[in-house]
Image 1 (cartoon, rainbow, N blue to C red):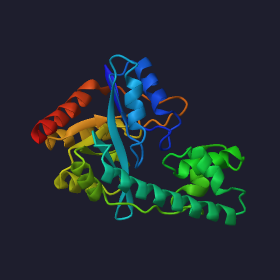
Image 2: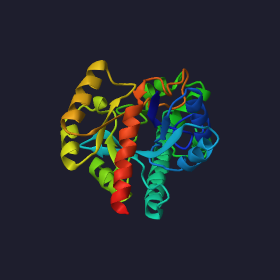
Image 3: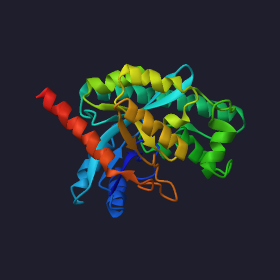
Image 4: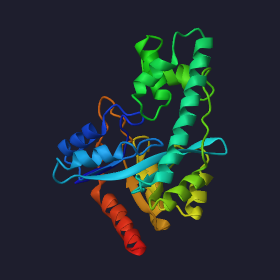
Length: 276
């Protein structure tokens, strides 16, 4: 039996609604699926509600914070975060406003390059969710400027590309602290993508609870390396597809052991007992 502990929905830059994610996960016979949208928790409750219709599957409430450290993007997963917390939601609203301002700047740059694109078209793609560069890429695809999302990033939206605009980000340490304050479990996402590997050891020293070992962009060597690192430091091992609803669908395709979920849940249960 397997799980998928890293999935995005239409509430950030995924193509499947939370209800669709849960339905697909059930059809794939997954024991658990984690909703980990970028900088938003709005997709969690719809997923939890949907799971009531499917016996045997559990939804793990989560979030993926986009952070930055010395110019490098670092993603921090927060599992079992208190997604109903008022202060957390106010903070996330502020982050979303920063995302919107970034989109205006990106669109302005694209327009200066002679591209026929408008902010309203991009916001329509996001459907009121956590907006980001993938939504700009979708519009560029629709209008025939590029043939794929990947080409849009390579040609216009990635770092050093002509329409790139850096995002205002919190630090990974701030994200870890915030997750702890909201009773969640902080995990370092896909460390194999980091150029500065010192970040991993710094976050371990800072008190992160686990490492995402299995990920779509991790090689076998990455998996072995980070599994050993996690075990040597008594950290949780997690894993997920980082699925965004693409075709072919990555959801549940990386055989993440159900034991990863059980140990994650066990840590949450121990934490709750301590709070009682």
